[in-house]
Amino acid sequence: MTRSELEHLIRAAGATADDVEIVVIGSQSVLGQFPAAPTALLVSAEADLYPRNRPELADLIDGSIGEGSPFHALYGDYAQGVDESTAVLPRGWQDRWVRLQC
Image (cartoon, rainbow, N blue to C red):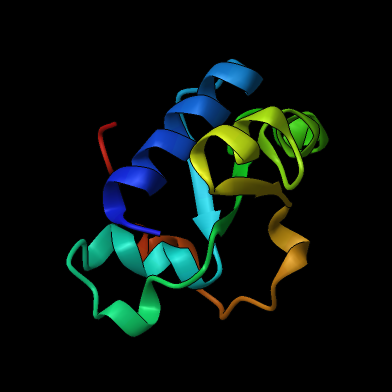
């Protein structure tokens, strides 16, 4: 997944959940700080994300633009709707957020 593909997923997730703040966790979050990441880091077709202000809508994202969805079929990548408990995150991880304006 490229940075522009991630930005597309973020916009789609935001529209789906009616939330302008989408949090990306997992391997694709590296694209926030390193948009030109090495090719080895770009092989995943999915991004784990959730709407920051409406985390209860993560399942809606998963169903709308997730694996096997029409979005996935059309664009080749997809979002996995998750929540903060999906990953074991270090203390203070939110202090290192990289904000993207998509």
